[in-house]
Structures are given as C-alpha cells and as structure tokens.
Length: 192
Image (cartoon, rainbow, N blue to C red; front, side):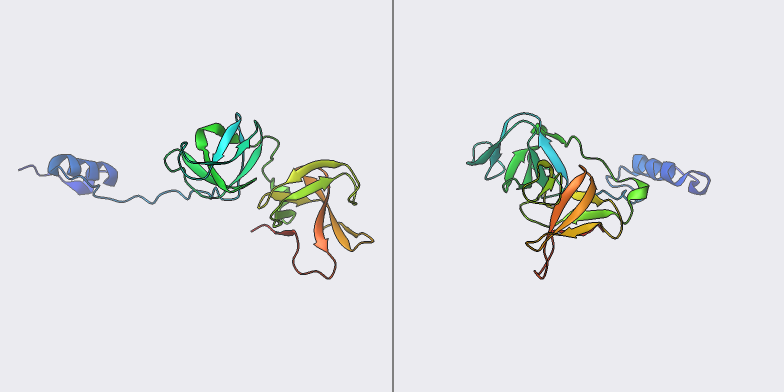
C-alpha cells in the first residue's frame, strides 16, 4: 500500500496522483468550465457555394443553394454531425466546414456602449444612403445582427409616410427604417 501526504501537493497534482494510484476513471476534483458565448444570432458566410439542407444530412432534400460569401444567421449553439442550423436566408442545415466568419462585421468597441441596437425585423433591414425608400442601398443588417447608431438617443427622422428612419454608423454608415409612427413594435431594440 502506498501512502501519500496530499496536503503538501498542489491539489491538481494530488488529484492526478490519486487517479494514477487507484485507477479511477473520473477526476477527484472538478474545474469550472469557462463561459462559452452564444452562437445564436451570429453571422457566418459561405466559403463556397453550398446547399442548405432540410435535415442534418447531405442526402436530405435541399432548401436552397447558398452562393459564395452569402451570409447566414446561426440558429443554434453547436455543430452536430458536421451540420449547424441557420435561420436566414432560409431555415435549414449547412455543413459547418463550409462556413467562415462574416467579413466586414466589426466587433463593438468600448465607446459603442449604449449605441448598440439589435435588428428584430425578420427580413432584416436595408441600410440606405439617405432616409428615404428611393435612396441607394449601401448595405444590410440581418435579423438579430447588431447595428450601432450615431448618437444616444438615436438621430431619427420621420418621413411623410410615417416611416421612422434612424441614422447608424456600423456596420455601414447610413439610415435604416425603425418601423412606422403609431404602429406597434419597432425594427431595432437595445442590445443586452
């Protein structure tokens, strides 16, 4: 029989020694896992043209074909059997190996606190050069993606049709529609 004075050892080393000596298959100590950020709502884009499947199988039916660099919104936190669920542009499963981080999406900076808004419009929002529907589209923001207004409270203009336009700085400088005056709901909410 082996006698070890555990109180003189580092607890982690003592735990490993105990496993080695006793042949235990589970550790004698527990470690708290680091917090993992949620993937839901994050943007990814297709590395190559790839199918969007109805199930987690490349032999299942296809919903659509994603073009190279087409953006998708993740709808779950883990890859299962090589596939991950996306909610936009259509709901379906894509092989995770065919996705990469979205280009042009900038993480918030410390000065952005209070300027962040999350898109709630299911179809996403067009970012326009000026606050009207005939202005050139200079970008877009998908459902659950983040945009950053230029001021807090947001700089806004109400058009003759009652549409409320909000000026944003990121991901592309321009204007987005925040819905209509006297209508329930809005297209943007504060980020958590």
